Length: 212
Image 1 (tube, rainbow, N blue to C red):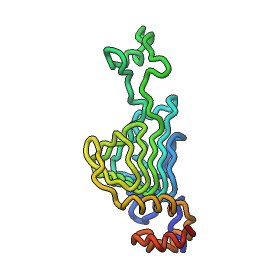
Image 2 (image 1 turned 45 degrees about the vertical axis):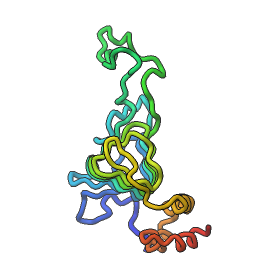
Image 3 (image 1 turned 120 degrees about the vertical axis):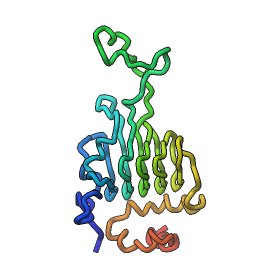
Image 4 (image 1 turned 60 degrees about the horizontal axis):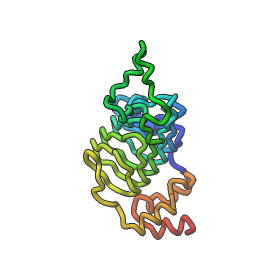
């Protein structure tokens, strides 16, 4: 046994609200790792409708790692939502044309926060909002209805609006070892062989399996 196939759109047969997300993505600028799932009673195909203001001409990417769990109606606000803020008005006159296009922002005048990056083994709770350019470290937990405006460290638990660090799941030395071991990059057979250690906090067994 080597676990389910990451190519399976419905890994829980008879429960179609959970799907391995990468199999539902159409945008070239959304990249999702193996085994990351989206859970939505209306179907995982709804995920992309919650990636907002993601315009191809801007070029920013949403990068999501492996083994992430993403709850219903998590929203990703991308850089296309940004307005020019250096003038007196933030209103986007230029998009309506008819002479107003003459105030089209010049290159660099619109805020650009870069790609939004979600690490591996991240759990994002119901109706959370991730703002443009945020980086969320592996192993982090985002509480339901959080608004994440700043980067989230690996294995941190954050919540609120704006989201703040509530605690760290493990001490600094353990977090460092887990990031070095990076079990999510192992092959499926190796993960299957070491599931008890992965879900049971057996760092000694993980070290042994990783060869560190």
